[in-house]
Image (cartoon, rainbow, N blue to C red; front, top):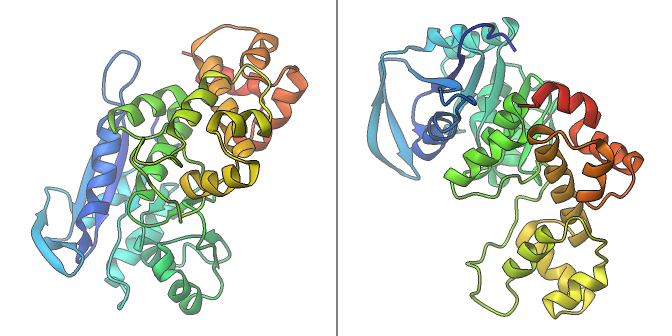
Length: 321
């Protein structure tokens, strides 16, 4: 992280015919994040070369201008590239600036087809990446050195991150907040956005969304019940019984509505709750393991390290508030 002693600057690079929805996502998400004392955690700058159309499908409902130009991405800690048309390469000057920002240590991320700009800039070569499923084949064909995964919501390669289409940009931005400030701060921003606190990057792009209660196959009540039972042992049979489904039917509906299996979803929720407890309480690890259903500290450490990439103790040291 390059920002020391100052606010973290997020530059949103608005290329020609930028996607209006994608452009708004980082502006909205990062503006909601505050430090414990209430001060803003990020400064968001939309960087535009003169003025450009903002597109929504085939239409351009408005134009975008800003007091910040493309060159200002060189003074940012994080640069986010929203979706763009994929038929042509972006302006060569913008690509040079992206490469220079990355060389200077900035974190670079893309939303939807913004991945094509990162690819043209050479920032995805030899890396795993994703984009909107509709354009994943085109990205892979044009840039064979990129390991394109069309099935996931986002890919975190450290300094460079890419996300799938539309709403996956929200998941990516919340993931960045989680990396910077921990799970509790990201969950607070998610509540303001009326979003789940975490959808993991490996979750499938193809998810069937339902309004809770619209039919008998809706799992909203069961998901809520599972969250309330995180500290208790839950088997697949227990979950199926609560949902009043067979195990096979539960598995089918669960994947359609969450993109994963019941037990994997439960594991992710337990790790998420462990993160929150480590950040916001002084409970010993044994109590955290018990409260999140892992039982033993060794089990907590194992699953926590696999999902978060560090130990519970190191995580608490970094994010305890």
